[in-house]
Amino acid sequence: MKEKITVIKVGGAIVESPIALEDLIRDFSSVEGKKLLVHGGGRSATAMASRLGIETQMVDGRRITDEGMLCVVTMVYGGLVNKDIVARMQGLGVNALGMTGADMNIILSHKRPAGEVDYGWVGDVDRVDGQALKSLVDSGAVPVIAPLTHDGKGHLLNTNADTMAGETAKGLAPLYDVTLVYCFEKPGVLADPDDDNSVISLITPEIYEKLKADGTVSGGMIPKLDNAFAALQAGVKKVVITHATAIADPEAGTTIRL
Image 1 (cartoon, rainbow, N blue to C red):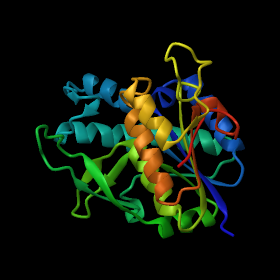
Image 2: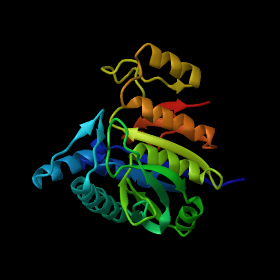
Image 3: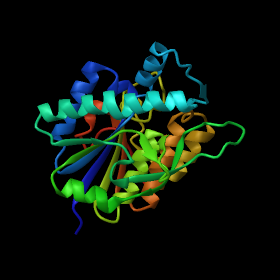
């Protein structure tokens, strides 16, 4: 029987609020067993780019990453945000290890080919080294992974944090009983975006198709759910979308099942 591990992805809105982040890290520290965290930080990167006079370009909510923006996201994701989370975790007795996908060759990606839009130095994941991550986790470390990968040719790549969390969970699935938790500022997938009490407790592929067809699920929630189902199909045991304050509650949020 495989050991359990929890892979938690936290969105930028939580990371960028000092109070919300403090609550998240406290709750994360109470999650039992082996665990790791994947974080975002896009708003912080946008704010830093503005301070440095670097223009932020977005297409359909996705960041264009030219050389200047790659410098910014590397500083912010891999430095400021990542090490702030690590220091806060250490203050609560969590032996956190801040890293990117380039460290220990954990996550290898390729530069997204230019199509109608050239996203620049943006990476799509090719491989996650689950064994390398397992060696860290089994040693007692708690990886805190910034949304940066590398191409194996000496270049960092800006990589979607939701995708990184899903791919990391998939990479660990042969080695652990994996629960993947996407947490953000809402209590789950909502039937009514203006009503936090309208959480949809369960989404299956059939329900998902209906929710997309009637417009209940749209925008950024679609790639999050696509990642969730892909993870389940690759052997991840359970996927949950929930509020950042409920990550230790197995009954909270929206459960995704095949």
